[in-house]
Length: 399
Image (cartoon, rainbow, N blue to C red; front, top):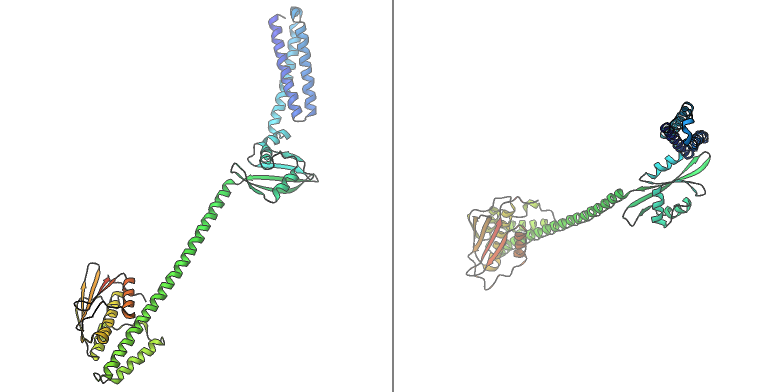
């Protein structure tokens, strides 16, 4: 056997020796005693043959090539076959080390411990979290759980939120506790946003309730004002009729009594709401009964609108004041359509006021209602009395 042939045989035996050592390590990792013994024996034979061949390499010309070649190839083949078989089985079967490696790659923290707290399996994430929470590695699962039991959800300094739970299990007749840590950062963020939304909704509900109460209060005040205006107008009308009757200008006692009966029903709340303001025709007839002429010219708001009711209320108030304070007998009502709604003017032939008009309850209530409807009321006293209403575009009266 020449030197080149001997070198090739040494290389083959060295390859077999290395493969055998790899097989031995694989068997040790997987705790396979029989496989370890087989690999060790094959590796020993490979190494012994390699050592003999290397010692006789200077006299390799005297060695027979056939037996050495057969031995080297056979031992190398056995070593490679054993190592490949162990490697192939390791890929198809779970081992304690593969289980540990798999647990270490989990995103969650995991620990299995015996009843006395000694861990039998834990992953790297559990050790990392234990360091962050307690300042040391997880050496006793019971001590760690005592720390987490009162507050199983914890937010770390890095902003991540973790939730821990412990479950009791039985394995081969022994009690085992499983502690699991789950990253719930996203869930905690959504919960926080939900709580903020709930707070905003509660605040909005409070504002809506307050708004509803304000609307009810405004409606109540509006109804009170309308009732006061109605009572003021009706009683003023009755007083005027009574004054005319007592002065002898009117002899219809029944109409005077009817006016006062109407006021009594109004005060008792038995007077229909739709009758609270006379129409212009009714007002003209009532004025005629007390010796006052009402003259209407121009365009006035249509019946059934809030502007029409304000115009009629103003006419009633002007009629009352004309008789009570100015001693006149003629009331002019001039209406015209404007770009923004209506303008209605009230003039009379009574005595000229001596100074600015002091608004009583009737005029004050009329101004309040007019401004609440979006209109405007102006009063002039020189050269003669004139009341002007600027009313918005027609809108239906709210019941």
